[in-house]
Image 1: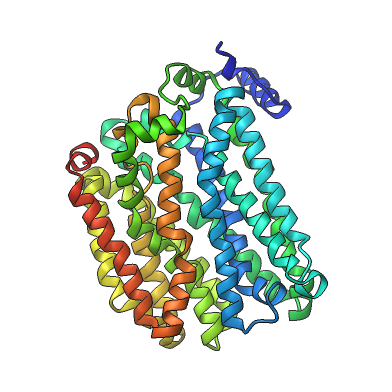
Image 2: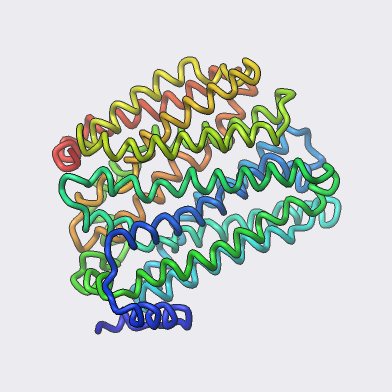
Length: 442
């Protein structure tokens, strides 16, 4: 066995022992379960922070500012994770090459869980002044670095095991973690807001979801390690199909694929925040809607997102992944022209915006990940896919809540629609320019 595949942590040894006891090789269904568990835990972390960045941090960390300014600053710190994520990929790729994937994943997920749990102990502005904002920024960057390092290649492993006629179906499986994580996070915050007086929620109630996130990460760590250390995965690793390559070498060799991969899903990633984080901030700041009721709407709409993601797999296998990406980008462009204004049309308008938005998001987001995996050479597939995902999140989603909220507060909701339209246009242009992509993923 290659040195990189030898268990290097106690958790990894336990996972290997359990696998050996089972006496069977991993199959695609188990890989899919591991992928969904891992992505759901990461997105639960993500949405716990996102919801708190609207409901908690403006009052806890920026009480000296007006609510809009405090939320914009909160969103600025929110974006730091996306800036730090490529840094995490650089650091943890080196760990992966030197000490193995199990060690990398263990360190990354404990850093993610530790940073998340540390936020639960965050003191407020009233206690330490601007130090509260600096600590929050530090912990948020810790989350971002960890997310860059938590790339385990399981999505690529699914793609490599996918039959030619089922590539779209396998591509959508990792994406299910986003709406599932949002549903759990939204319902948990909704319960706490409804069950606690406002003073208790702001004093201590909001901290509970961050502890839950840490516990979920521990469970997800073992589930993912159980797959990472299996013979099937090790064999692919040793065959260099999922070999971590030096990042600079990967960028020099695959920069065209990386650039296209970063911008092709821009409509989907921009839409992602336009129906998750941004509408909560707008409704909370500019309407009389209660946060608990809107979180319920968000959770219900996310169920529609789950259904749409599953449907995207069927549609992609029937019509081609590029066709689905292009068609949904065009639909998002049309959506941007009228839908944001629904947020000012009362409860029925809000529900319509969220449900329609999540249906479009699911169809688009379901095929936005890994569309370029087969374009990378085997040597660079693992590192190239990770770095491409980092850039796609940074350009498409990192600053979306802050920019959309600022634009809509200054120029009206139609300006937020214009921002979403720009993402759709970039996606269509990227798909049109890359003829090789068109031939490869159809």
